[in-house]
Length: 130
Image (cartoon, rainbow, N blue to C red; front, side, top):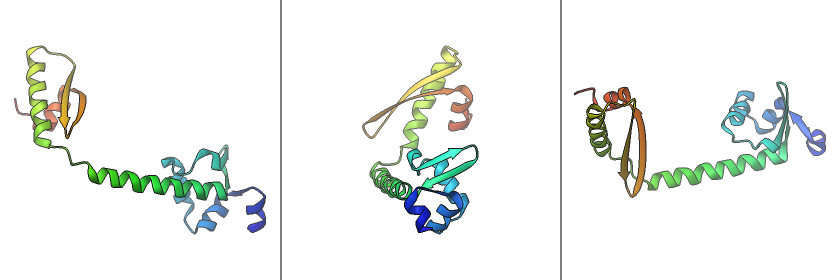
């Protein structure tokens, strides 16, 4: 293993064995973008991994995930009652002048969001009452 590791790329089996994870875990990391694309080669259905680059990429990805989780913990959850209120107003506007999509602006915690939603989405979210 160390000879192949020092000279270039290894198979997905060897990479999974090196990390002591299942091959399906490696494939999941690829799909989720946790492995940088420059750390492996893909030809047809065959992968070859540069272990050093792939491990460094996984560490960066893990650090980024932890930072994102910490940032998410600082943002308060959306005020569902306020969102419903905006959607009720949007539905009233839709009924006054029917259109397929209804834009609605929601302001939560200093952030502004514009929601473009179809009639059925509004009805489903606020309980379908008219």
